[in-house]
Length: 403
Image 1: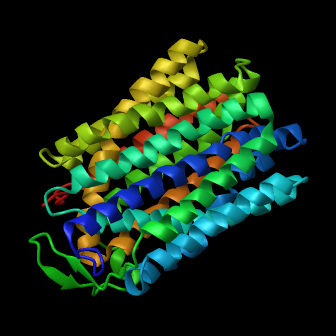
Image 2: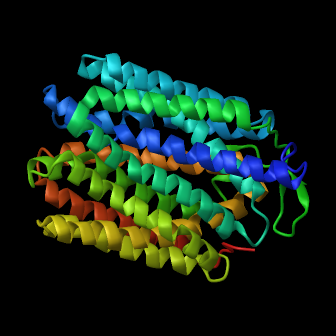
């Protein structure tokens, strides 16, 4: 287990609590601007590809730095790099507040991706290191609660703030939240260094897989990569145009849009503890496949439904249930891989895959939006998610996703 973490039970609980608060508040702050930026840049005259870039530009910088984040975190410690990432998030929020052009907004979106890459991947890796063998689902599902609920209530909060105070107030609020996270980590998190990992039998092992070409050959990681990629493509395309679709086609208020964007994450987050324990007892591969199928049905509802409440039920409840089921099992399986190759390396790699899919989905949707109705894009999103699940089912056959 990580050096610097297992000093006594009090320190262990403190570290776990600080990491959960960091992920919750960080996800809350970052998600505040996600659904707002496309509408904001559209009001400045952007369309098509520029709309997509306003959401997905963060993926560019993330993809560039994430291959290095894992090695840095596993070799040189976590706290300083987490603080660096959060500080960058504060800078990006301040930049949006003062930006007056579409180009500057996209530039600071790129900068924000750099910051998120550090604090999220290394916080998740630290929670993974704290997870005992055979309890990965339990511990990582608590992380899932913090991540999903934080990410979920951010759009709702930004919708309310935008309705009453305008776009600039959203950016100012995000900067304030991220600054509070910076203080939390600086004061409450001890220095963390990881030079060893833990095998599935509970024994400490050296991290001896350092080359990426060796890492990506691991069959289980390949399967988890495919399902993550499918989800990220669907997620990027959906969130790039969902707020805009609800705003222009259904003429919903920003608060109502925030309810839909928030709802799925809240449902998924609240169900994480239940599905986390289930993931520790039952076949994680089957849970991931079933969850992907259910969530794809929920997303497909966006393509055929036009009433607020039916969309709310489909996207929020059906989609949220499926998302929670498969993500709880996936997080637990990632810890199993992380014990063998390095927790930060594993988490940063999957985060890089997620950002790559986010970019592909968002940019692809930007091109398709100029040729297809937006509702058709949601159907394609459901298909991408389902296809990723099918590839995962094929590649993960016979693999051990639990201890």
